Length: 439
Image (cartoon, rainbow, N blue to C red; front, side, top):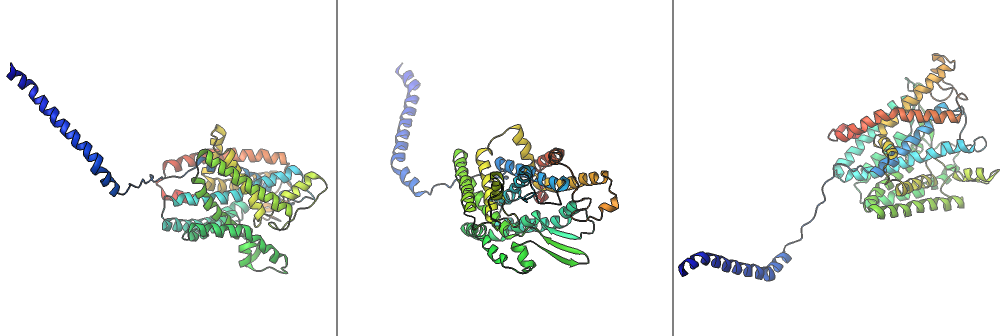
């Protein structure tokens, strides 16, 4: 009986004793040896996963909104009865609604250039400096080609290219090339350089005010509009001097880093403070009326027009006050509305994800419809090929009411949605295709 009990429970007893001894030894090791070993081992560095895309919905939404608004200005140019015969910001002839129609589109170029700088910073998170620098240089050259030979033709319909215009795409392109060089510098150097340009470039206004003649094409490229003959009835129109645009893109690049340092409510709070600060800076400096814009405001015939004079800031080149008023509003939009997702915001975001395609196509479409209307008013094709002023198939003084302009604008935007949506989806599904980054 005893032998049977010994055989039955002896093995279990041995196992339990061995287990107890092992547990005791492990406990002692953990209490004595392991703390010293762990202290000698350096902590593991947690590396965040490499993101293949830094698409940010709020920024795409803002970009899409300004692209839609931009089409309003170009629709007004081609369809309004005073599109090529008068300046909508001329306080002697404008109306508040016409002034607003023009002023609201001031938001487009500076916000787009600012966000382009932020997008470049986001690209830098998944590319080396060398890769990003080369990409910006090549894309800048590509965009200059598009400006001169594609957008220029869409704007003029002139197969002879009588005028090579350096406009919005040119300013973005040359700013990209400059930033492609600047990214090799320390981040603080980029920020200080961009801030110095944006805050200080209007000091050149005092020099320009004393000019008796054109300072030359090199200076006009930098900070002044100019028109220069090239060869055999070909001319160069410098409409977007690049200095202040380049400075704004540098600040946008730095804003990209600031944007990613905060999340959720902290980000919204930061954007509110920054946006209100920039707008407040605009109001104070504009009220002082001594620096920041070559065109000073003045008291007008009534309060409304005095306000219009106050808001009538200089775009060519964009003044410090012009950039503060527009970019400040854009930052506030990101703070208050950029996080909301509805059917409307998803609709608008589509345009913000394919701005290049939309920009090129909308010019062709607007000018094509305008040309059809021109011929429908009784003009001949030959007459349209020889414009008195501006693009072909345009007659200054002819056109439609502002209400008709708004209807045409809405139709143009809606008609481009299907192709923009298709291309946006295509880009999302084929990120491996390198050539898509140039479109």
